[in-house]
Each structure stands twice: as structure tokens, then as C-alpha cells.
Amino acid sequence: MKWLLILAVGAAVFFMSENTIARKIAQAIARLEGYGLEGAIPTDYHNPGDLENWPGYPVGSRGNGQITKFPDVGTGWAALVSDITNHMSLNPLQTIAEFGAEYSGGDPGYGERIAQALGVSPFSTLGSLL
Image 1 (tube, one colour):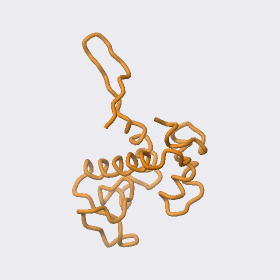
Image 2 (image 1 turned 60 degrees about the vertical axis):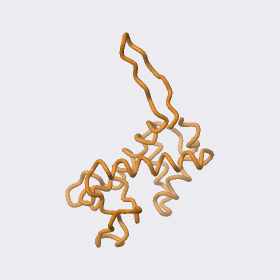
Image 3 (image 1 turned 120 degrees about the vertical axis):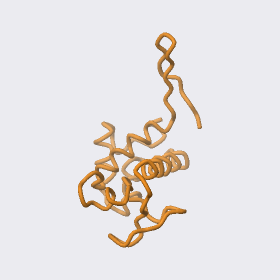
């Protein structure tokens, strides 16, 4: 993992990993997927990204029957951030609009909503966010 030094104050040194933007994208996706709402599948399945068929974890019977049930919230968040980080590394020239449409399974406005949450253009590339 690549690390960037962003701030040093006295003896305290703070580092930001390249997946910080992935965490921001993950937070936007979680909101769009309804994570945190009582009774929502992402909330009940500890799966803020509504990830499907994640290797090594069971799927639930709700929704399309392919949504992964993570054992706890931390595991679900880690899987989502990992998925986004990997996607960004492999597709740095993909726009947020394209990423959103792909991630959502075809919703043309999904990427625009992610971009709005990040305060950037939907035509920004994933690589430009790093």
C-alpha cells in the first residue's frame, strides 16, 4: 500500500493512505444503498456496500439472494473499502459516472450522486482523486 505524508505537528505525524478517497466513496455508497436505516438489507447484513457473493462469506435470502452477509460491521466496511481501492487501482481512467453505473448494475445517476457527495464532477477520473 502506498502512503503519503500529509501533516506533521510536533512529535505527532499523521499519514493518509491512498484508500482515504476509497473510504469517502464507501461512505457515499453506504448512504445510497440505505445502510444505517432500520430493516434495510445493507444494515441487517453488516454490508454497507450491498456487496454480492463476496468470497468466503454466506449470502442472505433477502433481495436478489446474492447479497453477502458479513459477520460484523467492521468486516463489511473493510470489504467495501477493499473493493473500491482495488477497482480504483485497476481502472484509474474510469470516470465516477462510469464507476457508479458499473457498481450499481446500470443506474446512470448513481455516479452523479457519488460525485455530488464527494464534491467533484462525475466526469472526474478515479485516478484524479488520488
